Image (cartoon, rainbow, N blue to C red; front, side, top):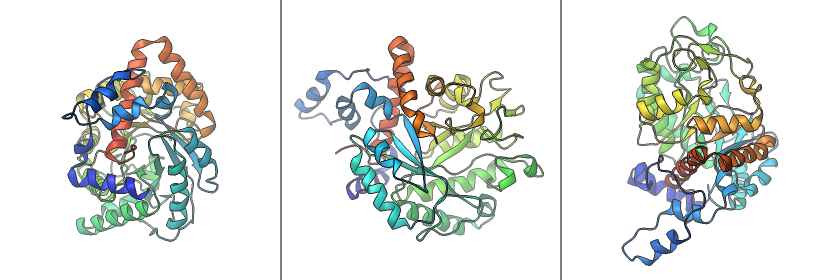
Length: 391
């Protein structure tokens, strides 16, 4: 992260992460910001400039929508990130594994941030520990699995979380797609392919998972790194993997489930984490629609019942088998229409098609256009908290 943005992010942390937010994420923004809004703010000596409104006023509609995409590049070849950054996407996800040093990655990320035409970029990575640790070079310690992390004494876990946050910040990473909040019941680990089979859970009860995951969220936030709670409403009981299976079903999780409650508690943290939406189908929540495309799950449960008004990011909707039956553009439209904020696709080549589809649907459907407006504002408010808006 460039020094100016790092200082801004630190200031937000010291003030309380919510202190840098302006307005509610549910408040729609106009498709084209009023021409008088910026001048009215500047003409009033007592008015405080709204960085989000100022940023919106300098962006055309396509640039606004581009902020809703987190596009993947391979850690083995980060050169594709140069074009993505210049095209104004909301963020870049570094996928795969790398033995590059933190200093080497930081130099690349600084180039991306300099190339971004408007708001700074989210630079994301999967850095959980155990089998899911993307960055392994100089400056990154080898992290134990989440299951082993959850067994550490609280002070030792807090130290690990602090070192994790510091190492990511040193590499220019400001968004960790961690921690996992899925609860895998004891004795069922081997039958749970995405989480339990790889020891990605912090424990076998919601209380244990919530305590450990909360420590990780705080350790990341102390260094200006935003956490991501995944995979809402929980993958701890499924018997398939959405990355490799076309249909993954959870037929036991309810709105009152302790796993769902843990997500809600952590999502309300002052550290303002993101929440990642699962692509599995939850028959007792919405029997016909995967969670990532379900307004009952994302809007009705997560936003309205649990009160989460921050960024909801999709699990991968680029290469995952669970979504391959839908055209790429429809995946983006359905996710945003359900209440999502940022579309994650490991396959960056489909981002232009997705943006075109969102723009076309918004032009034809005023209700969907209002949802897009709200998503853009939510995305930019999160960037404001992180010190990623122009100053």
